[in-house]
Structures are given as structure tokens and as C-alpha cells.
Image (tube, rainbow, N blue to C red; front, side, top):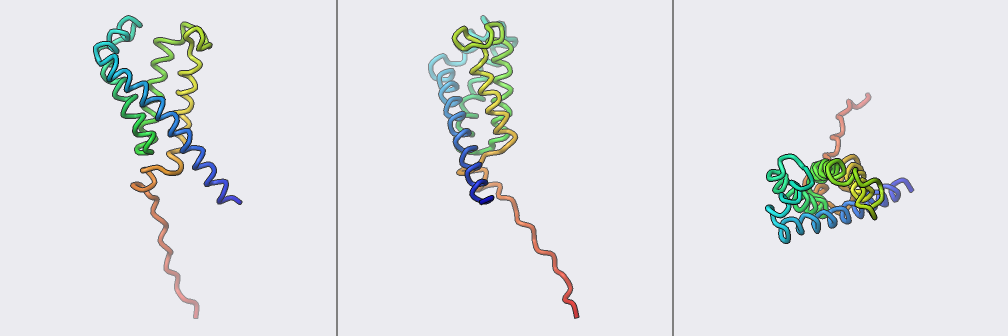
Length: 149
């Protein structure tokens, strides 16, 4: 019973990882391939984000590459931390002034993504992840014990 609950937890974490990764892949892809770095930096500048030119490059790359990393389950904790920081910035600089509701441009969606990424950073990649293949925990070697006479 305990073992099957662990598997279900791993699958739940993998499902969360995949969907959150897909969301960031699409949003980052839009910033990279539709708005490009210059358009993203222009939006950031109008929003009052400091170092808009720098973050106009960093944010699309973090979102796009972080989304891929989450989907694959590769470097999950690092990607999730970077994406959580990204969402903190989005909440602080863009959404907080609009209140909670997404209907008014508020922070509810960004907060959901922030907490989802914090959850992934704390729990790891779950099932079906490259992290599990590349970073398998090594089993403890049995300790040799003297044979009793």
C-alpha cells in the first residue's frame, strides 16, 4: 500500500511538472519567437521593470528553457527555483497593483505558477523524469558483519 501511494505521488508530481513546464514553454516561446527580445524588453520598460534590456533577454530564456527542463524532468529543482523567481518578479512589477483577480490583470495566475514551482523545487521531479535516470540515488552498500562463532 505504501509503495503504491509513493508511485501515485510520483505520477502526481510528474503531471504537475509537465503542465507547468508546458505553460512556461509556450509563454517563453511567445516572448522569444513572436515578441522577440526587443519587444519583450520594450514591454518590461513600459511596466517599469529595472534593467529591462537585460531581463528582456533573461526572462524569455528562463521561461522557454525552464519549460523544456520541467517537461523533461531535467534539473527540475533548479528550473523550478528560477521560474519561481521569475513569477515573483511578474507579481511584484506587473500584477500586484491590479489586485488578486486575473480578470483585472491581477496576480492570481502568477501566484499559482509561483507556488507550483515552489512545490516542484521542494518535491523534485517525480516519475518519468530524466533526473531519475541521470541522478539515481545510490543504494547503501551492506556493511560486512563478522560471523558469530
